[in-house]
Length: 172
Picture 1 (cartoon, rainbow, N blue to C red):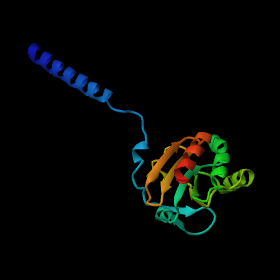
Picture 2 (cartoon, rainbow, N blue to C red; picture 1 turned 90 degrees about the vertical axis):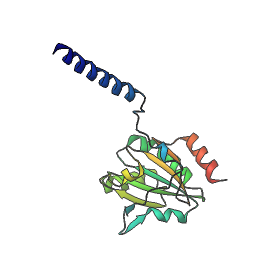
Picture 3 (tube, one colour; picture 1 turned 180 degrees about the vertical axis):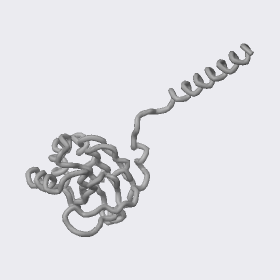
Picture 4 (cartoon, rainbow, N blue to C red; picture 1 turned 90 degrees about the horizontal axis):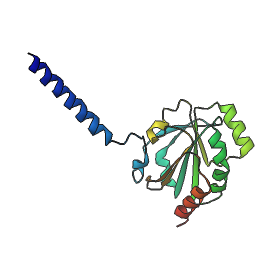
C-alpha cells in the first residue's frame, strides 16, 4: 500500500515539475507587436462631436493613417501631443484620434489648450472597442497604410525619434 502512495506522489511530482518546466519557456509579456503586417480589425467608432460612426475601412481612403488612442487625464498623452501636432502638418498622413475613457468637456479643454492634430476625432467612452486594436493602455499609436495593414505600433508616448521614423515611412 505504501508503494502505491509513493508511486502516485512520485507521478504527481513529475507531472507538476513537467508543467512548470514547460511554462518557463513561454513569453509572459503581453504584446501586440505580432499584429504588425496584419490587416487592422474592422471596427465602428462613434464620432467625438457629431452623430455617426467612423468605420476603420475608411482608412483605405488615405495614403497613411496614424490611429492615436489618448485621453485628457493621461500624462504621457500630454507629453506626446506636440509630436502629433508636428505630424499633422504632413499631407501624406491623416491622424485619427480615439478619445479613450474620457469626459467630453475635459477632452475639448485638452484640445483647445494643446491644439487639435486630428483629421478625424472619435471616441471610445468605455474602452471596449479599443480592445479590438490590441490596445491595453494609453497612449498607443498605430501606423496603417491604405491597404489597411499595420506598419508600426507604438506603445507609450511617441517621441522625436518615432516622428522621424514615421516621416521616413510616409514620405517614401
